[in-house]
Every structure is written in C-alpha cells, then in structure tokens.
Image 1 (cartoon, helix red, strand yellow):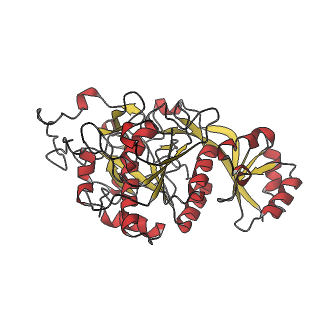
Image 2: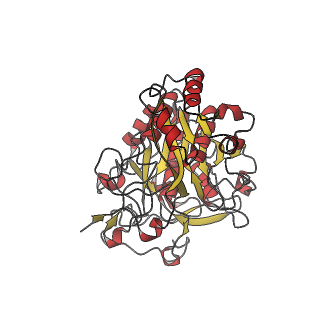
Image 3: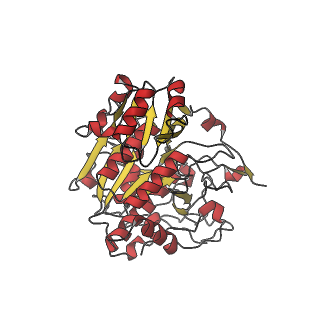
Amino acid sequence: MTTLIATSPEIEKRVKFTGKQLVLLDKKANSRSIAASTKNASLKLASFSDYKSNVGEYRKAFNEGDGIVFDQFGIAVINENREDQISVLTSSRSRSTFLYSEPERYVYAIGNNEINPERRMTTPGKKSVKQKKGALHPIAFTDTKKMTWGLQAINVHKSEYTGKGVKLAILDTGFNLAHPDFEDRIIVSKSFVTGQEEDDRNGHGSHCAGIAVGGANHKTGKRYGVASEASLYVGKVLSNAGVGSDSSILAGMEWAIVSNCKIISMSLGSAVEVGESYSRIYNNLAAKALKRGTIIIAAAGNESERGAGIITPVGHPANCPSIMSVAAVDRYLDVADFSCGSNGKTGGQVDIAAPGVDIYSAWKQPRNYKLMDGTSMATPYVAGIAALLWEADPDASASEIWMRLTQLATRLKLKASDIGVGLAQVL
C-alpha cells in the first residue's frame, strides 16, 4: 500500500527556515503608506527598485537596515528577531498596508544527482534497453544520434517553432557561460548570490537551461533543447552549493518580470510535510505574475520513493495553485520513482508531467554534458514548450498558455495525482 509521508531522512537533515519573515502588503499599498507603517513599527525597509542599477546588491538592505520590499509583488522580507515590529505592522491599526507574515524558507536545487550507471540508456547500435514489465510504453524511448528521448517523447521534432522572440528565465545555480553550444546566443544574466558570479560552478542550472532553450551538441549534432532560439535570461538565485532562500528567489523573479520574461522556470524548492499548506504569499505573487503575462513553472520535487511505497507531497513553491507543478516520467512513460505527488488538499497538486529520467543536457566546465534525473529536468521541458506556444501566438495571455499546455498534454494511464493532466506535448 502506498503511504504519503512528509520527507525522507536525507531531506529532513536540511535546514527549513532562515529566521527572516515574508510579509504580504495590501495591493493598494504605496510608498507613503509603507513609510508610515514602517516608521510606526520602527523598521527601516529598502525598496528593490532602489537597486535598479545593480539588482544583485539587494542584500545590502538586510545589513544596512531591517529588510526589503519587492515592489512588483508587494512582499517584504524582514530580518530575523523582528517579531515585535512585525506584530505592530500586521496589527489591526496597520493591517491596511501589511496583511500577514510567514517564515522565509531555504530552497534547494532539485534533482542534483547523477543517475545510476546500470540505468544508463544504451547508445545507438548497441543492445537496446530491456523491456519493463507492465510498462505503459512497451518499447522504451531511447536517445538517437539526432535527438534525446525526451524531445522525441514530447514530439518537439514535429513543431515548426523554435521559441524565437520569447524571453525565458531560468532561476537556478547560474549557467556555463562558456558552453560551446551557446557561443552565438545572447544570454542575459544576473547573480543574486553574494560573492558569486553568474557562471555555474554547480552544473544544475546549466542542465536545466540546456533542456529549455539549448540546441544541439556542436560536435555530434545530437539535439537536447526544446526552444533553441528563445532568449535566455539566467538568474543565479542558488549558490554553487545549490542552496538559496525565498528572498533570492523573489529577487530573481522580480528581475525576470521587470525584464519582460514570459516564462520563469524554477527547478528548485523545499520539502513540505503532509497536511502543510502552500505559501499564500508565493501564490499571491504567482497570481499577480499570471495577470501581468508571466507563467511560473516549478519542479514538483524528488523526495518520493515509490518503489518502497512512499509518495511525498509536492514541495514549495510548486505546491501553489498559481504555479504550474511538473512531475517526471521515465522513458517508458511511467511516473519516476522519485517524483512527488498531489496531497489531495487545496493546492499541492501535480499539474503536468514531462521526461525526467536519463536526461542528457548541458553541464558545467569542463565536462559540458551530463545525464541527470529529476523533476528539475522535467520542468524546463514544459518551460520550453511554453516558449514554442508563445511564438506561435505572441498575443496569448499567460493564462491561455497555461490552458494550452494542459489541453495539448497526452493522457496516460496513470493517476492524475501523480502526473496531472498527462505528458506535456508541443503543437
């Protein structure tokens, strides 16, 4: 019998909260009302717009004052040990400006694991992968000399679109800016991690970006990216160790939205416990982003062990109803063993699935390529498809792109709680 549990022992070792607080502002809040409320609470909050010339310096607000307000979202992040002041902010007298608070979380790169050697796909010309008993797809998809199995599974080769003219942001560990497959691509990048440049020393961000907007291996011609002509925006919001916080994510998201990115892809998050609600603050900002024309797509999480009967809930922030949550399937189109599932409550659902096992893509220097597993890998497939859809219909709203992603998905003989509407597909 399948059991829904909170987290695996390994995940439980991770620190969950930073000590800071996120505070939601009323939609009618303005600079004058914010200044009056913070003065009354004896708090000094900077505005993210104050760092317009260098958004990467936003963390100075935590050292030089009590925190920062992200203007586009109407969210403040306030330093630790300010509980009394926050209580004053959210009291009945000030509630017209500051509504409620919740703890800031640490977030982690999802799927930062090299796959098991015995599960590696064979190369063309060698003995094919073994048939999987009870598999939904009796003959496994496999990489060819021309294209990865993931691209074949989502039918990207049938599309005439390349994502040209569509801005897509990858918020992760940065990107391998010297990658030979991206020599002729314009990449806009910004680091939100103190003391670390945008260049990816982890590899996770490069892998995700390669899937979403990469082209083909410059030497072999093997294609691995979905939207090869989309404009790549790289926000380094996770350190080279693969760790960040809500404030770095918010900074990257606001930067991406101000930069007019239509898609934000986030293969990051933190585990949640059974019955734990989604972040109302994140869901609020995601809903605002949708209305403004940006869809946010995030990884469901890798904490499950389905072979042992363990399915863990979709993690933060993918569990927000206004963020598209992506599960992973293997080359037999079966749900990946590690992929998190819906918790049966409001929010926390899986929306859609994409390839996430044995995925070939870009990597950090000097290796440049690697096979990876994870819902992290599934997420940029969906982001890349969204770019193709937007190129096909530039006037579409973000909500319409969300609807088309779900309408185009191929239904599989799996539970909606595991893969949502099904396997993401191109036009």
